[in-house]
Length: 99
Image 1 (cartoon, rainbow, N blue to C red):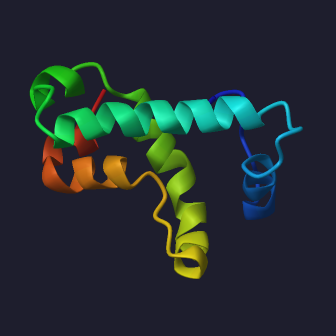
Image 2 (image 1 turned 180 degrees about the vertical axis):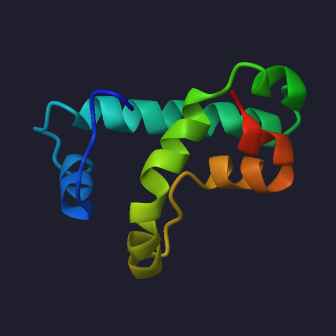
């Protein structure tokens, strides 16, 4: 997802999420949902944080790559983008340095 989807504008990013006919729609939703679920397992204590962060580069990379465009959307909608990933980074500073 990170390498296949490289929007240049906020409009390009926003066009994928609600458009179920877009070839990237399913990949976008599945990727975001997967990493949010994985990060929620850490936040709930089901997985050891250090063990997970030893190999979790992609979820945090996705957050870092796309989050800056979602600040405006979050302000308008009130729905945070990748809230579990954001909470993981905030609670565990090692997450900001994930591989």
